[in-house]
Amino acid sequence: MGLWYSWKGEAGLIAYRNTDWGNCRETRCSTSGFLAQLHSCLIFWKTRKQPLVSIFTAEAEYKSLCDLTSERLWFCQLCQEANILLLNTAITIWEDNQSFINIANGNCNFNNKRMKHVDIQLHFMKEEIQSNLITLQYAPTTEMLADFLTKSVPKPTLVWALAKLRIFRLGVRGDVKKQSHNELRLVNPSPKTIDY
Image 1 (cartoon, rainbow, N blue to C red):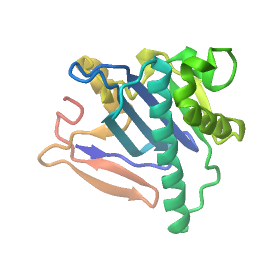
Image 2: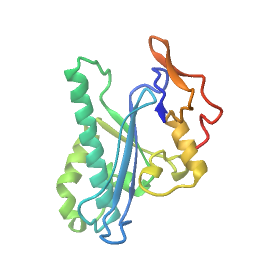
Image 3: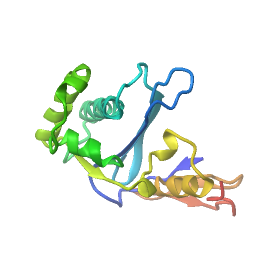
């Protein structure tokens, strides 16, 4: 497998995030998964079982969003230490749960007593959203690139997601060669380059 990097593509930080609520049959802990791209190139990803059981779907979603936000902060600090200038450190996060987007953006009222135990995460995320460091956007499940990080998906869905993420299977004679100062391309790929 290989990643194909190019500076052509959508500018800025973009992420896809997904949570599978209570999917562990033994513990009922949720699974979080996210991936982030810079100029449409994959830069970091993570999938993990959450350590604590979430009582509500929104709680599991907030835990996952906090993880992603922490990774964004880490990436921005890494770029700063390496003297890499990011013109915009804000991130657009694509999410397939419209109810969660409304709660996070403060567009709906909900019983705070039911969510009191996630209050700190809730306030942290609202501060990030209000300061325009995070923008939540809706992506239908059929367009969610992070789905395969949290659950089994059909082969065509996986092939589609990997191609969108520019993750290719390199053949025996396949290689990656620098095409110009800002783009890499596959050289002599085998016929099964995209056949998973």
